[in-house]
Amino acid sequence: MSLETTVDLFKWKHYESEIILLTVRWYLKYSLSYRDVAELMKERGLHISHTMIMRWVHQFGPEIDKRIRPYLKPTSDSFRVDE
Image 1 (tube, rainbow, N blue to C red):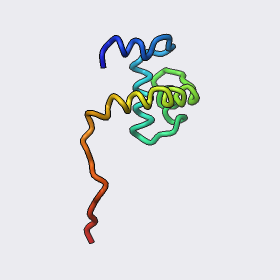
Image 2: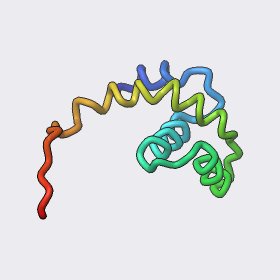
Image 3: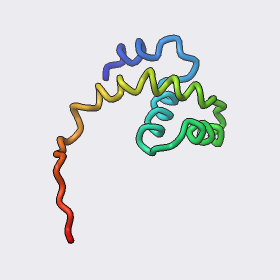
Image 4: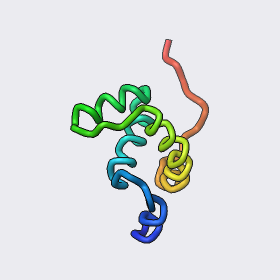
């Protein structure tokens, strides 16, 4: 991810890009609710509403998925269960 695309992606946002990416990553990785992530941010001194986090996930989630997809290991759909 180059600096120019990062700046363009988060241009005119009220919060810094690191905060936005952190909240979106927490929501996507750790099956938390929007309110849980908002509470975690509040504990760190940032008052972000759960609706703002929802908007960030809808806006930046697909872009994060597109950029991280090439670095993920391929997996198969089959699995074995021991008896």
